[in-house]
Length: 476
Image 1: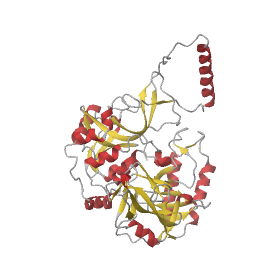
Image 2: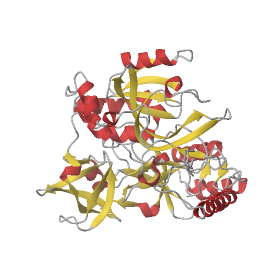
Image 3: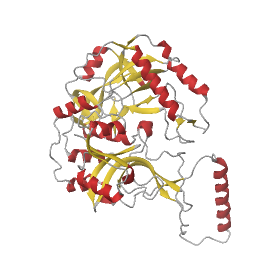
Image 4: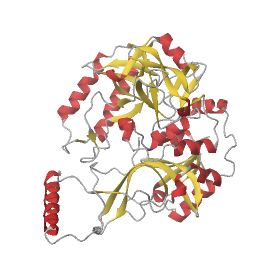
């Protein structure tokens, strides 16, 4: 869960523009009235705003560096030398997963013990609280987080209530569930009024994502658990528990149906008239049967496993072959999806985007961008003195289009390829900076998945994407 700009309030103000002409001339009476109304509106806006809030501007609908055809998968597929060559087999991907994911809690060889070490759970929960104390500096009003609030979070974590041997409960989210660093919905920020970047939000996990639960909060509203990519607190109302046998059976189903859409509908009935929920790209479900247009799948509902349906046009039977063409197709079906820090509201952030795209091929990438870069094959480690031109050339010469990742502190991108001598990437981004008239930076909010070159943010105080690159790596 990474952000390109760690700036402040979520309110976006439109970019300053010249006055637009009216279709007809306004009358002498209309002009003063309009001016007065505009003045009143500005005054209300100024007094209503928190004085700590910075001004943000809306980025252009299409960035200048990107032509319309660049926003299609076909443009990049046609430029790829071998778009249909198989990059890795399913068995090679399985070996990759076993080797690289530090958070993996279940594999085919896992015994799925009914008990777990209580001391390990205590250490994990304390580490999460320590992380929050470092980055959760302000509350949603812009005030410094009080010691009383920190004490209440720790108290609700109920660390002293963890026994030496913890009885494991097996279960799943029953919707796109929030995973938090502490058992609370309070919004904590690293910077004043940075409320779109809630440091308490760790991630989000889809319906049917196998999870092990170890502990309950003092207020009984939260459960602490671990899935195959991270650990954290889940709202009890957003998860369910099943027997260990049913959980293992669900996980090891011989045939899986895979969601291929950024958001795919899940239905209660075969006629697709009774809506259940949605799931995101890369979510897998056990196959039960199929009709002409739908897969019948197994999903968790409350405290049991039930039958549901997903359209065949939204899914595939099994993982996709790992080819550049398929990566491009999946990546571009994410285009314009809203940015959501830590998967807030079921959206994607930069590392979540990467994780879900590659899940379509069976990859179990870590949740965090820094760990994703560690898990993949390093192609180049950028030095601090490299110029933008040099860095651009390194990316286009060493990067493997479609399957390489571009990493910097706080952000990660998918390398698409070269066009016009420049490297391009697809990434989910909140915003970027540009030099302002007063020497300070203006912040432009994108808030979605876009295609850009790597010069975005050039001449700003932070520098361009190119200037901030730390690693070029590839998923293989």
